[in-house]
Amino acid sequence: MAFESLTDRLAGVFKKLRGHGKLSEADIKAAMREVRMALLEADVNYKVAKDFCAKVSERAMGQEVMESLTPAQQVVKIVNEELVALMGGEEAPRLVIKNKGQTIIMLCGLQGNGKTTHAAKLAKYYIKQGRRPMLVACDIYRPAAIDQLQVVGKQAGAPVFTLPGEKPPAIAKKALAHAKDYGNDIIILDTAGRLQIDEVLMQELVQIKEAVPVDETLLVVDAMAGQDAVNVAKTFNETVGIDGIILTKTDGDTRGGAALSVLSVTGKPIKFQGTGEKLDDLEVFHPSRMASRILGMGDVLSLIERAQDAADEKLAEETAKRMMENKFDMNDMLAQFAQIRKMGGAGAMLSMMPGMSGIDASQIDEKAFDRIEAMIYSMTKAEREDPSIINPKRKRRIAAGSGTQVSDVNKLLKQFEMMQKMMKQLKKSPKGFARKLGGL
Ligand code: GDP
Image 1 (tube, protein in one colour):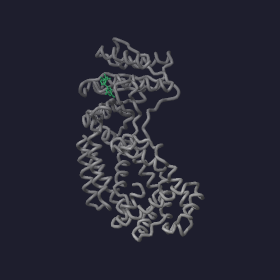
Image 2 (cartoon, helix red, strand yellow; image 1 turned 60 degrees about the horizontal axis):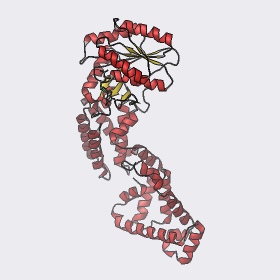
Image 3 (tube, protein in one colour; image 1 turned 30 degrees about the vertical axis):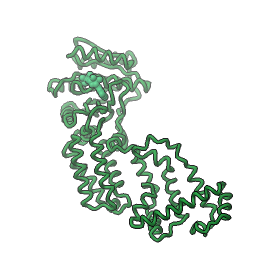
Image 4 (tube, protein in one colour; image 1 turned 180 degrees about the vertical axis):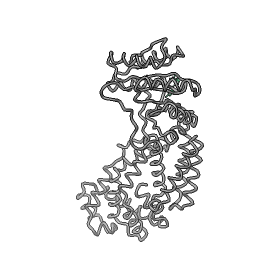
């Protein structure tokens, strides 16, 4: 599976960080050395990996992280944000498709990287959006390439324009006129590929661009080629000029290097990614989704964000202090529930945890929280502060007031007693325990 080893390596680094309470500069430095090694092993460009780690370190050394109750999570969050930035930011870069007139897309790239397949994938993608794309065979050197385009064009449901005997710039020009007559608004040019970068091929692409007003020149690169893919992109950009990249075969055994380095090295964003051989296997490239995937985090990042929004560190500290002094009471328990609710409830929290997505969150009894809250609200101030005074008569009153049974009240009191016992045991690490109570 793609990115697996990078994901595993990063998970290992974060796990180690989590073992520390507070983070020292040395902890962060050591972690960043490992992150850099992981990136290099994933075939990320050396300079990109170095700059990336420098940025993350600088932010991680900040007060906010070092003094946080959850420093390891803060570091994960920073790594994620920097990964997203590395790949182009929150907004997925789109193709500019005109609403009126024709949009011309030229696909180029080395042979075997998926150019023809992706020409058809794009056609299908735009047909689904109600557009009328036309494919144009500009590879005149390999008859098999024209046949292949016709086959995939048919599968996609798009017409294929061919003009044997003409040179590619002339084919492109005539295709444009043809498309106008037939009402095709997106023209996708499939150009010739070579096994290696080739000056003649490059010049031909330049000539096509001189002959017709290409709106989007997209380079099709195989993600599995790693740094080679990035070098190819650099050369194409310098000689032909590209607007973006289609990163193909991200479903394969890629180590991630190309996805992470290509924008930094070429200045051009990945706009689409190919995720399989079928024509539907095309996705708009979302840097944030790719970053989550690389971090193997499920949706844990939104969980961290929610925790950050909701977590009241002061409250956590106060709770910890009260536990130390054996003063934790039912009011504190209520406050902890409110925190969990702020984070979307226990079910929502679980469903966002990595490895927990298989759990049916609806099975979690959120009502149990409601019941407990109702019972605590039915207690008097004195009862909340010292539940040991709750005798059978009081229990009946609390049950009646909260619409529960005496057995429910007994259960709650037992749970509370157990919590108090645990707290005595955990006195040594109050912050660690407060974190557990906070859910993170
Ligand atoms: P071209 O020479 O650049 O036009 O490459 P093709 O379109 O002929 O693709 C080369 C091979 O890669 C074909 O066998 C495709 O089925 C395969 N291929 C293309 N895109 C993808 C992809 O995103 N994932 C996978 N797994 N295979 C792909």
